[in-house]
Image (tube, rainbow, N blue to C red; front, side):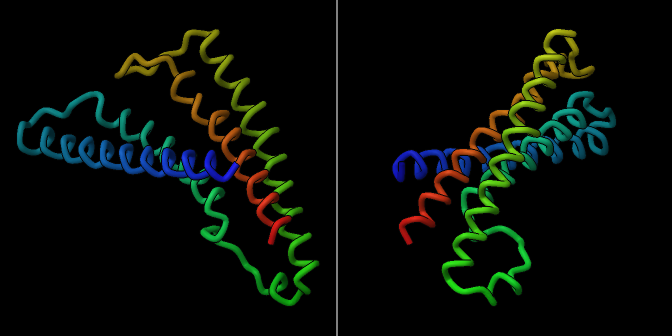
Length: 157
């Protein structure tokens, strides 16, 4: 499981860097085309919006996999004994996995199915919106995997 975790973590990290790089190039091109060329590109705003959606969802997945990177208030948690702290952290991971399953995998999967079935496409890029939204259930599955990994890691500490 450790090897799968390392591969997935590195893949998610690389994907974040690539998408962020593409977003920077896209925004720079938007500025250049608007102020230097005098004619704004039609696809850049839409691409930037989709890139931000993907960065946000993938970034949340990455932070879940890092466990230590979460912004959290741990004042009360630090007052607990080690055993109770471990149990509380396991409960948090279970709740995160359940949220990812219900909201991201089931709800996101339903959103992808509906938008693909209705044939909705983006105006400028003409991409099926189901492909854009597909990142939600995919990252939900990754969050579930990372939560299971974190629970297993807590068991062996």
